[in-house]
Image 1 (cartoon, rainbow, N blue to C red):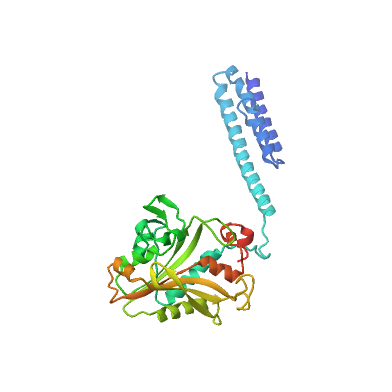
Image 2 (cartoon, rainbow, N blue to C red; image 1 turned 135 degrees about the vertical axis):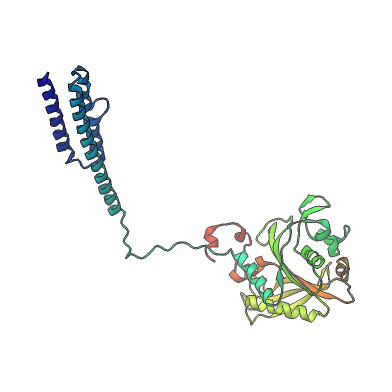
Length: 348
């Protein structure tokens, strides 16, 4: 029995020496995993195979062999962990070397977004009025018939309703606003004079879409109410706007027109910024381009919100940002601005 004990101890020493010898040259995780299965595997590992003879040993021999097996297992497990860490460090360094970034190279320029040309036109228009003391306000796009028509001196049987093809949500009651003019009423109901506001926003009209018309577009509504206000104030204000947007050399003219909520009413033209008034396709060879509608606020509108027309007066106007963008960028197709084609939008 002593001879068998010595043989087992010699086998364990030999196994430990062989395992350590084979462990040293291993350079990959796959090889290390194979080594682990060969020597320390729970089912077919060599150390497990030797442990299987423990049942054949005497009561005195078992502790001796068990201690030796545990010592060999502890030594091999420690060396396995050290080898794993060494391989992990080596593989990490190799990965870092392959992914090294040359910090001396110039950086890659990241694409930067910018404002949509219509948003830029709205911003520029409103900022001109802000510099003149106006406040920017906002309001609902879904309106009532009262604010969109009745309070603006457009009763149910008024022919002006036929000028605006309406998207009705609830026929005769709720609609998508056809203009930003309802903000005149809302502003005057909430404020007492003096009132100086501009209201940019989307408007909707049931129109056939073509190169110059959209079913959804934008307006910037403006309103000024005070005790002293004349048509001359309106003209001076809008002339300043035209020159801020299109250059100090811009010429303007006013033509008589009709809007139910202003009296007198006018339309303002500017000399064509593209041909400088010489005549071109954009201005239909007239040298002038219609820019906006305006006028003095109708006394009926003032009375509707509780203002005394004998004491207060004011002016209102409506400007189209799409037209500003078209003239600024010489684009003849309005649908390009709402088409979301990045090839087009990246040009601005």
